[in-house]
Image (cartoon, rainbow, N blue to C red; front, side, top):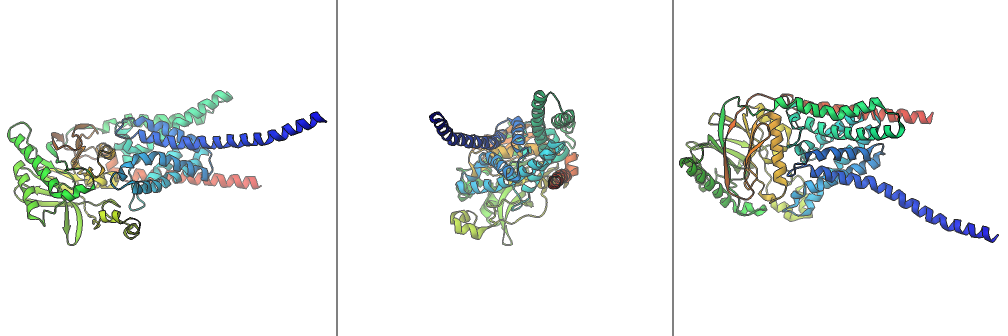
Length: 537
């Protein structure tokens, strides 16, 4: 009896310990996919510029495919959200450089919701045949939504923008950023299925050849497509060449307060242009056909301030060729972020008003609410900018130059509209001084490289404080400046007028991929409903 009692006591004592160990094991098992989701998001961030580790996007999506496979919608949303946080928190940290962590964290919290919803969709299609195809299309649909809402969208962080140095880049010429991003994600999800099915075949000795073939195609087709698209990438001149000068005047100091030194910024750009003119006269530098100044190079309205007009006019006369000047002007009570075509003899002859203005930077969509939260935020944007309505293509000494001002470079339609309107070369005037030495300028430069290949155009990037650059139609940077230095770049570049398939197709490839995603989700929902009915029967 004693032995029996002792055995019962030990059994009773062991039961709580076993239960505790079981709960700990379950908690650990739950933490593994959560940690994997967040870390794979960080891995995707590391694949983005200024690093050239573009290939890390593939294992990032392979891991995401693993953690989402077969999950419930709640778990999938949470895991997708963690992936979004791991990716977007470090990617967008530059948004809080001058205004503090509040806006940065708010932006990431909102944008990660879209990634969480994508996680739900990827998990839903994870049981379908051809799973990598449906999952990649769902990701593309999520990017399409994020590029449009809220506040007209925020496309920053599109997968395509991390591929400027990658093997997949030529695909941008076929279908723009949606096709390029889709190919990368498809290859990543396919990579997961190749590994999963390979391990399963070794364990069961019963390979599923059909599923394995689909997985291999998901990896191989994007790679083969990228090689097949390479003939579309060319820096051959079709309409002669032009010698372009990009001027980076620099700013007195970085940060939001550089706007309080508007006259100094204007003087710096005029001074650098005059220095360039002296080098041209001395025969040290080729004479440019036209000069490109950055966004905000004159925050003093030259139409309302004769002294600013005189400074710009003097610089144009010194160099003796047209200048595209980035200015802030007020016209008919509207504040405009404007590019002005300044002729050395005639003065201002044409303008382009920025169409895609930046929420919470150039206008405040929730001004009254933000004013209650933090008046310092609303004081930074005292008056909302107004939007332009027409594409901007300047005729500059025989070349047609399309203007895509800073934030607009992230939007597919804004760049394409200039090419369709006849641009033989694209200028992306920008002002990155607000973001100091953060990664923002490199991320934006990568966007311009993708746009060069997408539309087969030379892209010039004049920036107030760097990095300014000249990019060939094949996406190669041939000249660049440092950051926070006064400098100028002069180069003869090809002019091109042919349209790539991406230019011709416009938004159509994205629509097709969204429809594919909808078809996959519809199939998954219908299959789940049939399964429930069968179970009830």
